Image (tube, rainbow, N blue to C red; front, top):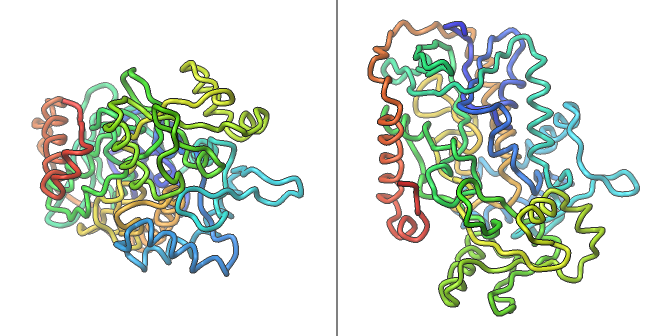
Length: 437
């Protein structure tokens, strides 16, 4: 691993990969991830990716996003995302991404909760895997992109308000400083800090703790989305998400008495709260999701991954309701950015779930996450392409001795993040933040 790159991208999910691929090929790019390259939340995304299907849907798409976000969204960010959707999805097709099509060859659009129109592109029920794996394959072919797995970012190198690189711990345990003209944080959210989450366990919000440490502005860190339908299990580890598109295609929610108790297509926070209330009322560990009446062949073709996973857990989606429970899923807040991914620190960018430009407001509309991650990653890359040739490498040298104790570092980060959530919204913290430890 060399010590200097034009750009360092921390995280190998869809937004990090798209940022790397959107940069000019004459810039040297280092991508690092603390786990395997594929182990990102975007790789797990099931439902799909929104698009502006036709110009006349713009205002409806805009309104759906705003309504789901409780009108706390940044309107400029929402417009940027929708306007950028067509080009981004066209580029995905160029990278070999496949989306499900109808018999006549057109795209088979679906819809999910709080959408007023069918505008979601999807590939079976593994859209995130389809998109992210194709982006990874493209990045691996680029001579200017180096990808390092099992490499942990332990700090940002800050010279005043300017980011000049990062401190990393390599797979062999050695700690080193790496310089860059620009650093892009694409490290996902905070799910690994929660007892019940759909996220990979290693996604623990490191970027937010480091931003707080260095006085870089955070925004709405307490705006955390709880997904209503995660397969109930008493086993430890990441919860298996049952995509909202299952409800979009007609699945209903039933309580322990087999009674329907909520409109399944309401925004996620409303459905999650209704489920939690129902579980409290009936003193049950879960409620149930039913596709009763849907043809078995259709279920297996439309949701093959979900069907197989449920079967592994002992439930046949075609023949019986499956037990589900709400779980932490997505962070709408994060490191505050503008619509180009720029943070309050110079030469430091944040994209995907890590950045917060206000596009989601207080609650994300289903299938806007992949779209948002790609659109603003591309915009950040465009900004870096223009600025990088004008930036000199920093000269600050960091004392690496304090980074030896990784466990103490993790503990301090967790405490910092959880205290920040509690400070901003004690009611939410008490209701949902059953974090580890």
